[in-house]
Image 1 (tube, helix red, strand yellow):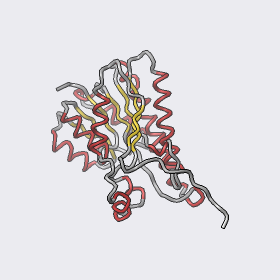
Image 2 (image 1 turned 30 degrees about the vertical axis):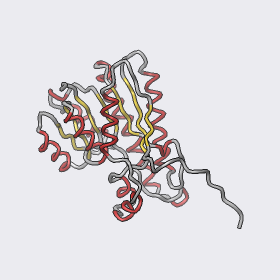
Image 3 (image 1 turned 45 degrees about the horizontal axis):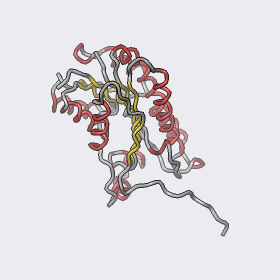
Image 4 (image 1 turned 135 degrees about the vertical axis):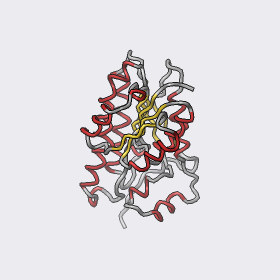
Amino acid sequence: MTSKTAWITGASSGFGAAAVERFVAGGWRVIASGRRAERLQQLVDRHGADKVHAAAFDMRDESAMRAAHAALPPAFAAIDLLLNNAGLALGTSPAQQADLAQWKQMIDTNVTALVTMTHLLLPQLIERRGAIVNISSIAGSYAYRGGNVYGASKAFVTQFSQNLRCDLHGTGVRVSSIEPGMAETEFTVVRTGGDQAASDQLYAGAHPITAGDIADTIWWIANMPPHLNVNRVEVMPVSQSAAGLQVARDA
């Protein structure tokens, strides 16, 4: 058991919620942030206010983010790990048919909010020789139809992680990027505007990654010896692989 503290964004579901469970089970304190206060409170009720602190706010609201940070109870104020998990995909249309508002929301959440949170906690993470784990995606490496801004935002996360490693050289702070492939969470339900049937069809028979699988990966990275850094982890279910290039032919 340790006395370390992790701040996990996007903790109300999916990878984030599973990571809360894994880190609390491992003896860490967890700051669980997200938009859905009732789900965060369920984590507090299940584990106790001495182990989980809920911080309900929208990551796109910088003032709310800073207020949540300033209001941390003393027991949670010393942060050793930032898990930048909050993010989303919206829409599956090709670029020429996409909703610009959805593009902007993805950029605001996946990019702007992530760098804002990182910048906010960097002084403390440097002081404590802590760690940053960023949740990216294979969509940042492998282009696909309809991936447009979502894939680009995740490519940013991967590259930002590598650049942070350069800037933090010599500080002892570790930075890792996890890039999952097909994973069954609420991801596709959100992306399709609540279409549970579309989500079920996508994952049927595919044996996809689970939220618990990624939580275990995060836990492994967080507990590596302090002289080791896992730069990138790309993980897919066995059923998924990189497809071939597309070719359009004249009729």
